[in-house]
Amino acid sequence: MEIVKYIVLGIYLIICVALIIVATIQTKDSQGASGTITGSSTNNFYEKNKGRTKEGKMKRFTILLGILFVVFAILLGILYVI
Image (cartoon, rainbow, N blue to C red; front, side, top):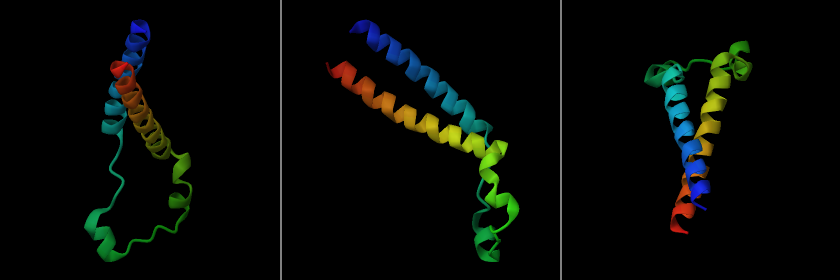
């Protein structure tokens, strides 16, 4: 059981580092208060196909890493209680 703990801990550390790197590489997505006040339109071609761009893929990868982070944190908590 100790080997499983160390393997899961190693994968968790890799996920943590990857999540930090991917989150810092991303560009800022929101327009802030000025976009809300001016009512910027999001109904254009770029906004509809944004998921296919590099930024869209990075956003999905960040979400995936965040989910894996939570799952492995729970798994490590369970493993260290046993």
